[in-house]
Length: 111
Image (cartoon, rainbow, N blue to C red; front, top):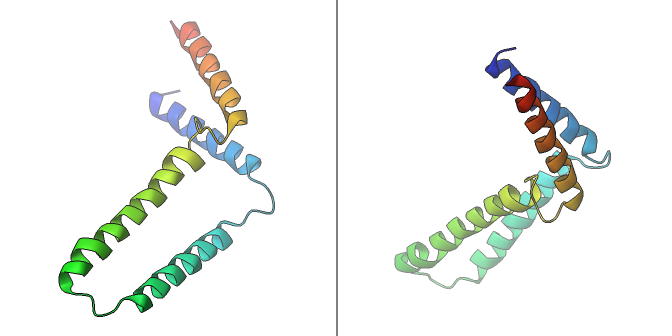
């Protein structure tokens, strides 16, 4: 097995395990819909409260807050929700440690 085939096989196995670990009631499209409706609702609410903002306020306040909000959403998913090392998922830590030990044993056997 080539290195590329090994990576693809591990990736496919990881995806299969992730799907198996996902609760049956979870629906990604509903998660996305709720997030978008809530986010757009907050933006509309806040925009309706603005009273004649200048271009400087749009560029200096609204744009940076938009960028920060997107970064915060990305960081939460990247480091807390979908990371195998997340503190929110203590059970996954044991699985990661077991995988690392197995990889170490496999590397030692290949030497």
